[in-house]
Image (cartoon, rainbow, N blue to C red; front, side):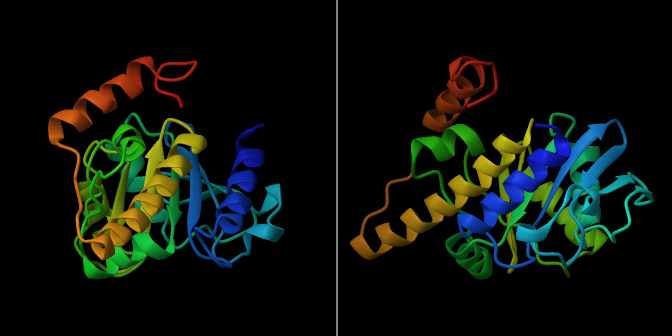
Length: 215
């Protein structure tokens, strides 16, 4: 699949797996240095076509496309500017992760796949208005070098070397948030140690799967 086909595929997948509803969330790919392909603002993923996607540069200027780019364009640009390892971003509004984001509590590394893909706690960014430059800076700070972060009172952002990895990060934050809330009902929560997370993350990046850095 090319970039556009992948973006349409994961957009529909987000809806099917209930990570977003209707028009919420957004997806982008770094297609070449300084240029990103991003989903349009306010359009339902089930009906998106390739020519609805928008090519923009790092100044936010539309280079190709007839649609208005996502309202979170600034966040995507800021992440790409600060994370040279990232070439794909997925932003979701999933239920359980959003509960953590609304309570401004980070999602801990409770399960091995979260440790491997995200690389530890999914931290919460400081609150800022949606679509603002302040939100973009806050998200970059919360991300650090990890695979995902929570956006306060908003949702989740996952990043990676491709869309599959970025999507997987969002999916695992949601899964772990659900598990975290369940463990609170059960009464005991065991969080993986920093050392355990570091070892699992290293193994994932160097030895897991068919190619280095891919799952």
